[in-house]
Length: 186
Image (tube, rainbow, N blue to C red; front, side, top):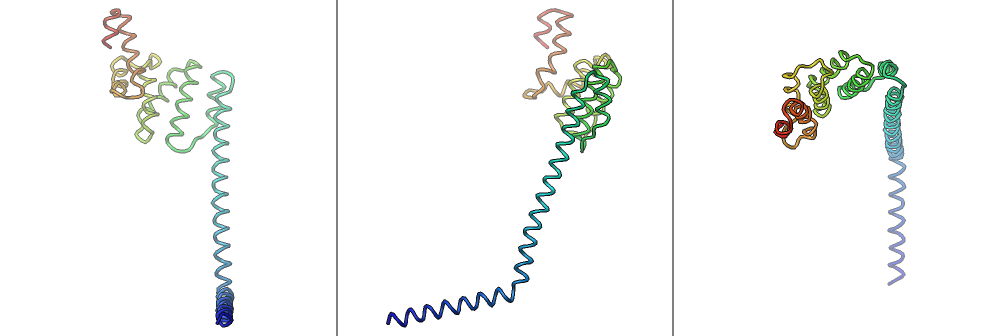
C-alpha cells in the first residue's frame, strides 16, 4: 500500500510540475513584462526622488551661501540670485531680504518686503505672523503706532507662539511713558 501511495505522490508531483512549466511557457512574456515594469517603475521613482533632493540641496546651498556673504549689500545681491519654490519659499526669501535690507540701512525695502509677506493670504500663517511681528515691533520707523497695534493684535491671543514678542513693544513704550505700572498692564 505504501508503494502505491508513494507512486501516486510522485505522479501527482510530476503533473503539478508539468502544469507549472506549461503555465510559465504560456505566460512567460507577461511575467517578464510585469517584472520589467516593476523594476523600471521603481528605478524611475527613485531617480525622481534623487533629482528632487539634489535640487533642494542646491537651493539650500545657494541660500546658505547668500546668507554667508560678507556685508548686507552683498547678501542682498546674492539673495536676488536665489529662487525658492512656492509662496512659502518666496516669503522666506522676502524675510531674508528684509533682514539684509535692514542691515544695509534700506528701511523702505525692508518694510515693503515685510508688508508683502504679511499681506499675502497664500503664505503659511507662521511666516505671515513673523512678518507681522517684525512690522509691528518696529516697522523700521515706517509704521505708525495704530498700524503697529493692528498688526500685533492677532499675535497677542492666548497661546499664540509669538504672544510674548507681540506684547513686548507696547510694554516697552508704556515703560518709557509711565513707568512700571503701565508696562505691567501691557
